[in-house]
Image 1 (tube, helix red, strand yellow):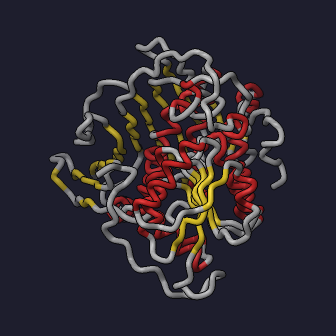
Image 2 (cartoon, rainbow, N blue to C red):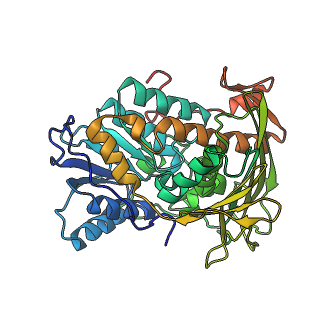
Image 3 (cartoon, rainbow, N blue to C red):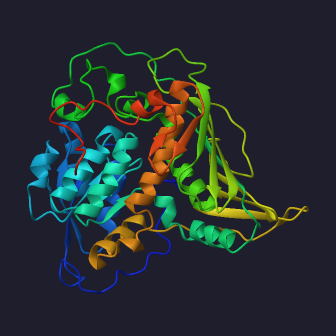
Length: 430
């Protein structure tokens, strides 16, 4: 199973309760924004949902819109309306909710605008591009009382939920350390020269809040992950999934200390973000310290505790306690080993349905039932940003959650936000 597209194995029928849409049988009208590779997964998931209609697609690249339309037509679904500009889409009062699969630098602004327009939101991870945006996206969801889910779909896995419950119940004792693995085979992106903007692309809209750069293929589709203007490196691409699970398993929120070292090894190419990164986080919980290690590796790797796929990627989490250890992989399974003998303990493999969870919350208006409500997603996302900031300034950060700042480090605090390109501005007051 693909970690992004695991099959629904335990989805329950939606609750037949009354919501803002009337009876549960009423159709929820959804728009998909950002029609790249991940959006194709969104479309496939939405088509499978009962009483859900895809009524609009939005992307500044006409070729992406065309691919989205063809996918929907192949499923014998009604053709949705096309938009290039998300602002125009949000003016349509008949749209109930949107899913966002755009590049990272657009996630928060689109979500804020959608909340202001009265839409519920499913936003891909990471929900923000920086620390400031992580706070603003939660503020918008609260002010406008919207149902906002981050696309951390591993949280909906029945097996992973069971693993978290068993650790909470003491299966491996006092959990003091989590180790996150993001060992993913990433080849060089090479170098690409400045070139004309492809026909059918509104590059100004694609750039949005980011600085306007001359167009190159490497700064465009997918490889935008590896430039600071638009992405957060592989820590914020694949790694955010495992950071989120590691934080969940440790039962922690914000760290008190963060340190990250690494670099761009082996390749001579256009990539700005590190392809190899070692991160360390320290947390304090009820007077006790807990640690998290996180490692990003871009090339050949070994497996750890059996966490490996057919492509020799090692993507998952390890949790260490006083009575044993437990491994979670990104293919929605877990295994455990207990005692000095490392005797096999409980294990399970079972997925879930993150979109069904979102729609249930939309219908009931109970955000507490979301498996990755935006505040949870935003806290995990700050771990990405703090590690990247530590890497950029070259020193350990001492984070104070009460003031939402790094103590005694103005340079690090300046990296909490950026200068927005008008009119694409995330507001200080949402």
